[in-house]
Image (cartoon, rainbow over all chains, first blue to last red; front, side, top):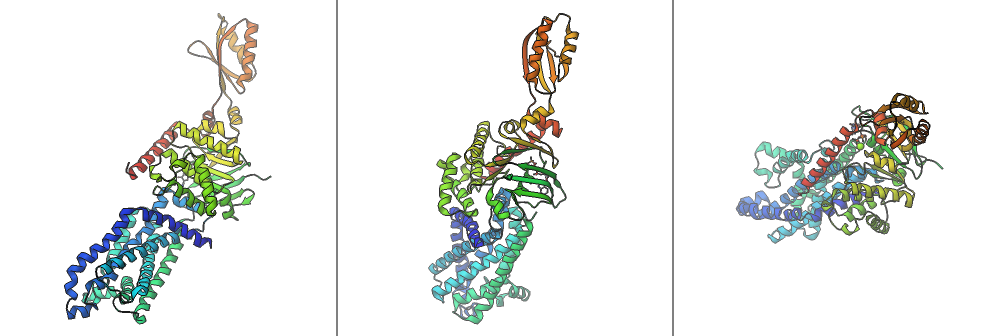
Length: 260
Length: 340
Ligand SMILES: Nc1ncnc2c1ncn2[C@@H]1O[C@H](COP(=O)(O)OP(=O)(O)OP(=O)(O)O)[C@@H](O)[C@H]1O
Ligand SMILES: [Mg+2]
């Protein structure tokens, strides 16, 4: 019970700051607009013919791309989990938290919860913007809620990874560099922006194993088609599984790093 | 009634092999202001962090309010408050947010947090600025807020690690006044480390001097000063006229006098083992007998600085300066970070 309570207040602190940083909020909204407006418009001819429509599964490239933009946003948002721990250690706040009678597990959990809530807010904004750009979500409100949930869980995976790295990486710059080292390839070696069938063989092989591809699956299915459980559940299972694994890893690493 | 703090044979070896604390023992009575003094790297911060459960001791017995801190860590954390050496305030939150979150982390109900935060912010003269981001606070305000945060849950024992480091004289004075008030109004036990000897002298009931992880002296400031002795009486006579040698021998024979030295300006320095104030009347009596007059007399008792140097044997000044430089550099860095 105190774990939940403590987790919430650790997260609340991050959220107060998230809503206070106006620039970050604006960037959060502008980024998807840029992606959808520029990238989407240039690429629209690709799907504007029967062959392309079949390859992409839709004649609207924006609709194809929206799940990709959603995942990209939560993929890059996950690094903030680790960054806030690095920052807290630097300013001594981490020590202050640990001197309080809180459940220590609440610290990494709270950081991840904050990342997940931020992710959910960002995804909701992308959904609204995409709708304004003419994307129709085939599964309606229910589907949108599931999309937000899955994307938010996905950001939990990245948060878990960045938190685990933050135990041994103690500067924000290095942490950023290391996280980008794998988020960028993860992004581009996936079907987030292009269908796997369009990729060269080796890249297609990597893309099929890429967790981002697994996460794109159910989200794209819910956006473009409908409630086809056979195509939704495997990806959703992978997301939930990886979230649990990396939450656990971040806990273990954190407990070890703070027991002197 | 048991002591607030009891420590026996405390040892701390860090993972990298540094032996920061090397078998120290002491106790702190309830309602006592206890000072831990020592050079940089002596193990003061390490000792505090162990006492509040932030670090695990390598060996030793530790009791807070008679309870083993390893057996009941959460209970101990609720009974103690801690303000670290480096101020730990989130500069992107307001003063109010900082202190009320702290209340949440101590599991206080919302109402109590509101009342208590108001009370503490008022006490530390921060209430007017509670809605401002702490990035706009001065170094002294941040330190006061940090101490206010440490008090949100009404701890019985307060640990302050160098609460006045890098602050101006007024702010230092103010902080020590608050500390006094906490003891008189709330009966709080206060465990404090400092590098300012005059402060420790005035405010601490007892002080321990720690060097290289070992306690080298522990007593009331007065007893420590008396213990090293060496009160210096400075006297100027008139009407000696050739009797210098005889006078010096006679003064040398007065009880507790260690030696007599002439000074460059023709007066004398009489070094007394202790209680120089009791030697002065004897000097007057002696001069009466010899028909000599005393024109001027002054007494200098050893300060806690002298005690400190006596026990740590190192020049304090260097350490102190590097410490101040470090604190200043940190404040400048903080300012740069906040774009000032
Ligand atoms: N986390 C750590 N890991 C390894 N060694 C440490 C750690 N923290 C402190 N030390 C070492 O332990 C010794 C005691 O440090 P401590 O911080 O307790 O000193 P201090 O008396 O508080 O000094 P100061 O007056 O500079 O604050 C030092 O030699 C220091 O280098
Ligand atoms: Mg210290």
